[in-house]
Image (cartoon, rainbow, N blue to C red; front, top):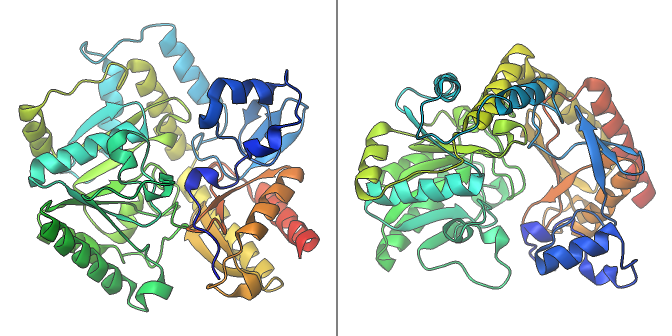
Length: 443
């Protein structure tokens, strides 16, 4: 019997049920009182963080943790060049985009060079949720349809519209009628010809949306399927599904909030590994290395059509402070060779994981590219017997060994590895050594 399907925010989360005996004046108690049921904290015992540098985080008790999870500060925690860029711009001016600002358009010109030529407009906002929400609206306006296709455990954000396309966030409510979720692209589901099988599932969803009277406005997915369990390969398998969507008059929305900004190690954007041309690309999280900024890359014709029907303006989206942070991130990725480092160190991690797998039958699969890796844990290595309990135990064991990782997948049995792109070989070896030792204590 397979375990219960787990929602994304429940994975590796602190349980408020275990908070009954804690000190009422503690920081944890204050957090739970302030956030209430909306409090989401990592680990069985949450950590108070007070600092960070590179791929390291520092807790209030002085403990230093190797961060193998947080992709928001993708070029490194408190990177001095990002800090300097933000500080200098904050000391000069921070204003909205109703005024001209050279730093904003210099940044946009640099960002646009990383995209296909026809994605010639970029709309800036503050969060990936906002970016995906805006992308849905543009897709509906251009296609004239309202239906969307996602994967079964997708997560794309937390606005009302984006929650509706985020099955991994829903605890009780079903998907709305205008959204269809198809199984994630596992070869165990679709067979050896993954591209063909996944495209057929997408075609079935397109037909069903037509039957329901919504039509197909688009397919939105991570170009590395993240919350589904880190599904990246083979490169190019996504192209057939994209062709199905475009033939149906829908748009392909590439959600690059997690796989974007050089994380794959081979390309700036995950969709480039699949040799597809998105109609819309959404960005967020690592865009400003922790500064809240996000965006949508789109065709100018689609933006024009959208704006003929509704006005769009974002007070904080595209402010000079965000642009300064974003420009620093682009410069660091290029000048410090972080894409190349992601490939080098990521390949080293994959090799180490495969060596560990030879000893531990419980590791049933290892997937990923660059510094975006998923490791499945299953009973006796049987993919039909996922073991989320072992995953949770191992995550918390590694936390006690001062290594931070996360979870993903339909059942929460996938270890999710997304360290900052500046991770070193030495730090990778620290992780691998501790992972093996952690498995030794649990198996």
